[in-house]
Image 1 (cartoon, rainbow, N blue to C red):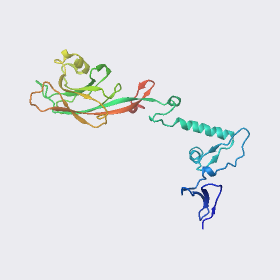
Image 2 (image 1 turned 120 degrees about the vertical axis):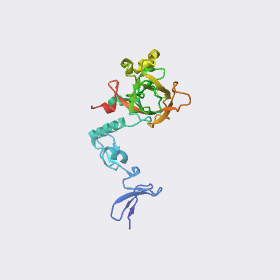
Image 3 (image 1 turned 30 degrees about the vertical axis):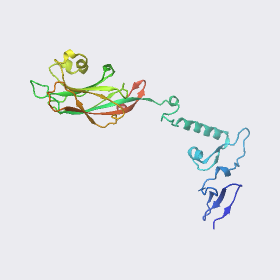
Image 4 (image 1 turned 60 degrees about the vertical axis):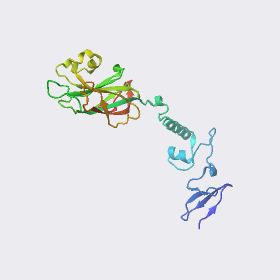
Length: 274
């Protein structure tokens, strides 16, 4: 039979299990617990001169002192230590935006959004090689109306109208909602000065006939709905394609990454330590 003995005049009572262990039950709520309720706790520690009562409730005591009951902080040094621990723990609290508080005092890096662009493949391209075998396609990516912000270019794939590049590039100066132009070219080996300079073709129209020929282009606005890493096909516009010919497509994927800014430089995490 359980022994019941009431302490203090409130709804909490102290009880014993059959094997003699003490627990506490609340007659009003019906809940029970092993640790002493805060309402029943009375400190028995002798106060030092000039030092007030220093208590840790069970939740704080478990985190900071390794015990799961109400705990006295003994002595001035221990009280100061607990205050230091609480201050250090507060530095790690997350605010509503998920950013660390007091970031500067912890010397943590800041992060910059970076757009990862995957130029995966194309299919159904027009053959732009009139006097040789088949086109040697490559693709480029530039900002629409803002070519100076950066560009990307795939490798050349020889003799195919269905190239697979599996190219991955990154644009560090990008904001969601901006539009990118993707152009597929037929590489002209006869003009190396232009072959290796996509922007020369993009910005100098007079050089197109003598250099790499365009065989399709498309403008893509990157927003939250398509910036999820999922490959999607986009139809290419080819003004030189014969009327009634099947359309051509390019497969792209976009992902928004966060790269650390170290010493003022946006750094690819995968390149660190190499």
